[in-house]
Amino acid sequence: MTKWILNGLPLLLLLGPSIAWAGGLPAFESDLEADRWIRKHSDSYRNMAEAIDRHGGYTIAPTTEAPGGLAYFEEGRGHIGLNEVLKGAHRVSVLIFEMTNLHQENRHQEVAWRVRRGELNNPAEFALLREIIEYDGLRLHRNILLELEPVLDTVPPEMITWVSSTAKRFADYQLPFAYDYIKAQAASGHTAYYVKLFEKHRAEYMATVRNKIRERTQEPVPKQAQQPGGQKGALDANAPVHGDRPLEQRDPNGHGNQGVLRVLPDSRRGAGLPCPVPPEYSVRLGLWELTLLAHDRPWP
Image 1 (cartoon, rainbow, N blue to C red):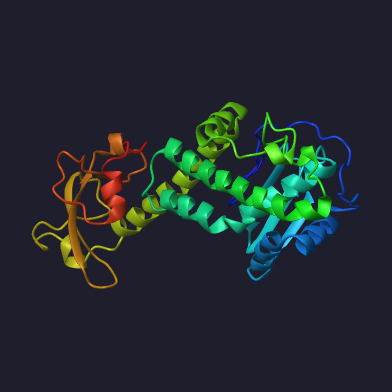
Image 2 (cartoon, one colour):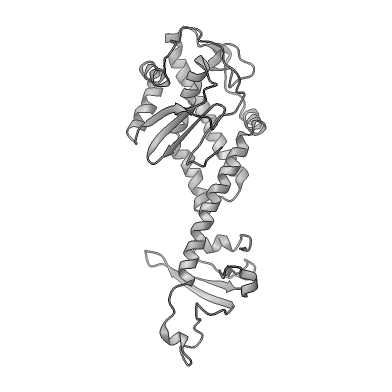
């Protein structure tokens, strides 16, 4: 992908060229016309689209950022992108699938926020969860095709052959085994995209943690603590001292937690940021960000 977006969701599984319009599917002059037609003839698609309309609406536009389609929300509005290589019934089918991705945005973002909060630290698990959501999207996609079948008489094979390597008729089309689907997504490079997206969300989490610790360690020290004969044991936050610093934090409900930060000598802490005590030395690190940092790699 050429840019990071909240939820870019291209499907790369078995993408191939689509032949001309087939069956009873109209020759739409635009993607918007196709969208309106599908809304008219599929209750499931219409319900998804209307739900998105209530949350900012969506735009359908050409894209070069994925070989097939992608879907994401940005600044409160949904976006569906379709590559110009998609033609005819194939293009309409991918449009339907990307609508299911917008419909499942809350699930995609639930997984993303687990990384942003520091709860999910495994890129393979993150990618697998995102792929499973898309797999469920194929289930929704098939249901919509079932609803369109009476209008089309026969669902054009181009609407399914980009998903299935075996079915030639809609009557024979079933979802692939989940195991086979996950293998195909990995082989296509689609899963690698999610691993890259994990690193973006992980960087967002680490930036938040660093900013919070920076704010805490740069808080002004009481004046008496900086003067000779001041409070015993007080630390000057601006002095190049190293050692253990006690921490006591309270959440908005007044619940307190205690922990320790080990401040290393300047030569080891780079920009002057404190490093948490390794878990084998730490009795208790109360705040979630400190707890996770204790298990993370040392900062540069």
